[in-house]
Image (cartoon, rainbow, N blue to C red; front, side, top):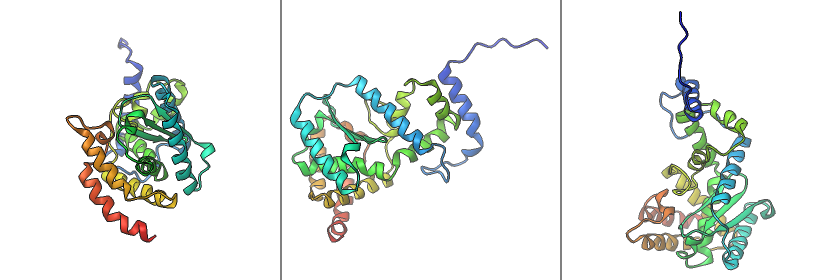
Length: 257
């Protein structure tokens, strides 16, 4: 039988097909959370750090010392409140008009300058940072990466990716970790994950001496800032009015705890 002469597939396509074949038996009805881990904790951190490096390479750091000082101070109070050592974390204000913020596995917190044009107080910035830290506390990035690996890339992709030793898949990394519209194929956190991050953020705010009720005012300001264009931060989050109602329902319990 003559041998078939095939054109080689691009590496990205090849890896995708390999991953799909590896997980085909698993995908009957993947929900958001899988009953098993396809991605280890160390891999989640590794990919978070790769995503961070990619952002640092693409986006300059803000030269506004005031913004950086405020972010450092607020983040330190929040991290102290959850028993984390702020010295083990890196917090950076990026020079971009995006109204956006994120926290990545590997202890990285990023806020874009555009966010400082919307917030009206330190408490409101604490609501943003506390919410993003809440995603890390609840390991939502890992949940999303598990689901994305199962659905799109397959069990083998992660190990192959790390062996390649480059950031070719930075877009996929960014999307899986929820960095935002500029860096990935936006995959919004689910409503349950968002509410859990909100609740954890409010608890941390209260423990750190911030006013949790300022989270309501923050979302009102975010909605008002939208105008004809929705702020990037809102592109991956539920509508502000729904968010406000949920937070208002949480506040009595937060105050009582």
